[in-house]
Image (spheres, rainbow, N blue to C red):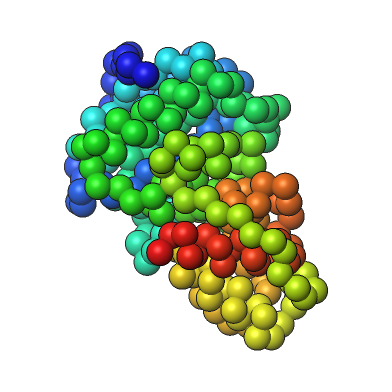
Length: 241
């Protein structure tokens, strides 16, 4: 796919403090693409991304990759806080959960896959560091959500995907305590989430499990670590290396 960029510069950026080694995918969560583009370019909004991909596959270029865009906000992954300095942000036009969340059109996903591949020709970005906004900010964000085709992206060579049969044992939910909860939290932390093991399944753990499900167990997004969720976590950890 030949990429064509539509330049729509945003003033909302500053200097990087690190070479980018992460990609963060978002949905715009607004009623229309033009409305989202206007906000990403509004100096008073103080929000931006490097790219925005419309539903018809058009790609808008807002901030140079060498600059830090303001897309992730308060965030964490693999011990790093505030991942804007280390990441390239892609906004994908979709009204989101607030305005009628819907499947992403094929033309849009084809453009996202091509864009991710193009970005990776310039920067060393590991598959395990291609993430959703909800991965790096699970207590605040839901995007790009459970309808985003992470499996398709991984099959195109970008990102981690793994499947597994459900593990035995009762589901773990908020209020549970014990070794099983500790192991679950340890696995989520090893993957990259901010979920230090305590052995107590609290709201933070539920938010983190929900974020993991939005990415890797899209048939169940309820924050309950059932056998499928736990097995999938182990499989993803193996695939991520």
